[in-house]
Image 1 (cartoon, one colour):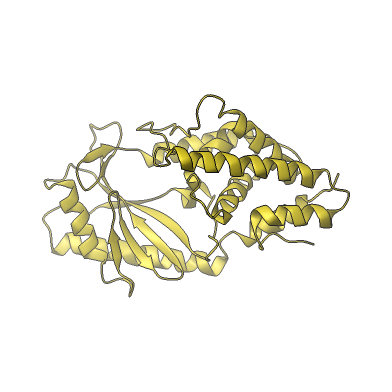
Image 2 (cartoon, one colour):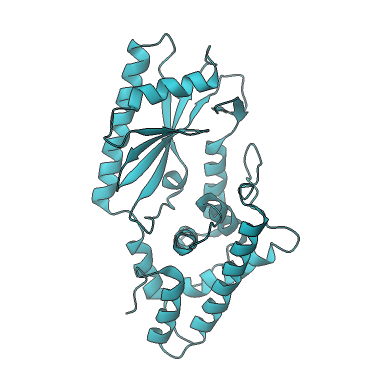
Length: 288
């Protein structure tokens, strides 16, 4: 049985942010925070918001995409209920950051996206949470929607601490996200894979075997329906935006992944096994 554990470790390094890119991201995030603070101090009568890094950066599962880019979520939090409509509050945040980059912004339904073309995007979801609210409320273009990304991050961290002390669970999430990013058809989101891995994680001394066993456990959960349920508020399905055909395409590709993983593990040399993994993970997966 070919052992490609070390190749997996090298692959994890290849798809992770380098220190210079992390530093650039931190500087960009801080610049956005300063702009937003200054805008609300000088151009509105609303209170100055607080900020919370969330999503894959907070979970330590961020990967660089196939095109070399990546996304970051920076939550903008108001500690009193704003006196304006949610879309108006989004527009204030958009106005504050619209000139931060040459590529500008996108006003999406649930966030303002600041585009650093060819590098990364920073998404700015806007929330409020008063002392009397159990969970935050997210601003969308049409309404306030109860949503608690911190609760989700806390759930994920609890799962990780209970099940894994050596960082393997985090690495597996990155492998699955990188695999999905190599597919030509629409796949589940990174957060969907994060929930699946945290729920169905199968530990092993080797990452290649852990990946294979965890993939099988995830597939077994699809017996009745293919979902990735948010364990935090609002309890939505992270696959809700995938239609029947897209889910079928995913399950077919996932079956091929598991088949190829089993074949790779059965090879009599690292070179043969690595070439099989390469077909699933792309050219960042090392052959030697």
